[in-house]
Image (cartoon, rainbow over all chains, first blue to last red; front, side, top):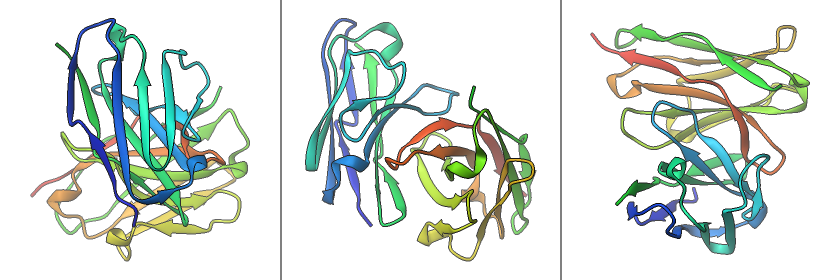
Length: 108
Length: 118
């Protein structure tokens, strides 16, 4: 099973700042099958990025994804108040899925 | 518009079973698979398994093998997840989610809280 490790666990930033979230895989992941989600308290996760770098429908362009192999990054160029949430990466391979443990982006 | 609507909260005793439903609308049900994902209180997301709505093929997370069964009813566009021999650490919010061809989950149900307590 591929293990995804996200860092940092918590990111304390101010609105307007840039957020860089990391997702490292225990073995190589196909870029086609790496996704990022945002989750706010009491809500279901929301798909942000799929295929490592493609934005899902309706996702603002301040969200971008990059990376390949074992290292992937989610960047939020300028944090808006509604962006403070928990973010998860997820990979798919061999008919199974795994999620990272999440990065919480909190207001500094 | 695509919607996944799940059944309501459940309270179960240890050793019992629970069956959660997920009714899909707004798309051709048999064209997409459904994953089930759970989230224990204050914890992260855990993938439980996947079912093809086209042919009923399934794949379950190894740790749940033997305790979980996923099914679909194409006549009502509904997916089901049954978990047996419930333990206290099965207490969680259970989500269904539609699977895109990129292996990602684009639409999610609202979640169903299952509480296991004696």
